[in-house]
Length: 510
Image (tube, rainbow, N blue to C red; front, side):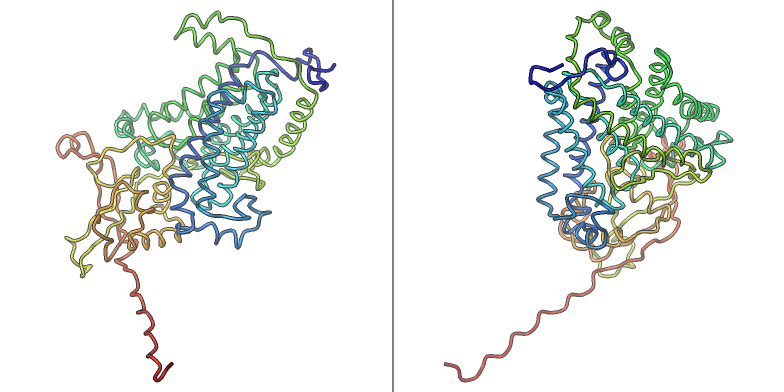
């Protein structure tokens, strides 16, 4: 059969390929992933030049000199400049915004496909040169999700079931992988004590974390049991008939909303919520919407999508076959005793292994960076602390809410306090503070030396714990800290060599 454009089309009887029962899910998936792409590119605009730019802590140009295009495919392998990075990021912000407005979805099936593939390629280019600042599981998760969602098509075609099923497989890997890593990890997950500590020691607590930490221990044991049920049992039900799949997805969403309420995990929880929509049918969405707006229970009938173009069916099936082949490695990883956590098996970051917090730290350590303008660094009164936007610092400051935005420097400071091996970026960071580098200082909550950079900087390690209710009432503090050691003693910039003397004037002359 030929369509109006003359292109061959496949009849609408192909119920195994396309469905009209997940149109709302498609909208949630496309707009949700686009929203997270928008946040990710805004984050790159604000942070990438200072962290990885020409004068960054780990410059891209140095990385691409030693890492090949084959190992890390990226637009920036050919050329990098801060201006090009900003141009790419701003362009992708506009593309993501267009999907939020529903513009590509109103066109032919290839239009949202093209938009999402551009977003995928641009963010992959950033991640693959982002080094330790982009070595987080949710970076690969966004790359993979952006690629898969590209093949959901537009309103002109029925929602392709193979893509929906593969998105459920992505949620399965994400949740079941995290559950297995916990059971195979620290004993605290097996004896149900992990959340005695987690709310206090997580990378970046939020304003609610203090209150949840002080809930009864039996509540925290219940949290762990609920986590095991959600991550080890419910993922299998995502593939069950409706309404079981929708109920399983709904419970996963509720568990993610609890994590949103109690911590700052960038966009990890929000993207999981979006991806869980792949298992929720339109009837369930309308039932849920009916609680908010009763008119949604009996919506006006939607116009049926057109028949499937042959090229669309072929492309979707070819992509699904490719993704199934790539699934071998993460599936094998799930069965391995030494399960990898947040691992990519190919440079395109497609079909990855996920999982987090296999062990929970029992104590919280923080690196406090200080500067001094005094000539003698031994004068303790002259030292002032640099406050970060998200990580704990001043004990009287309540933890902030930043997710789904990602504060990359603050997260790296948490790993630094845990004893991260690669500290090259931190050495450069201290040098930038001594130089008074404006781009670096904009990553912080404030600059204690507004009139000029300090003479010395140092880094001390403190053990932090949440204050008790009595301590908070008495001292108006959220944290109590004790010094644990010195990470970097006072350092200063090396003296600059004087400029070479001008040669003496020649005698005589013309």
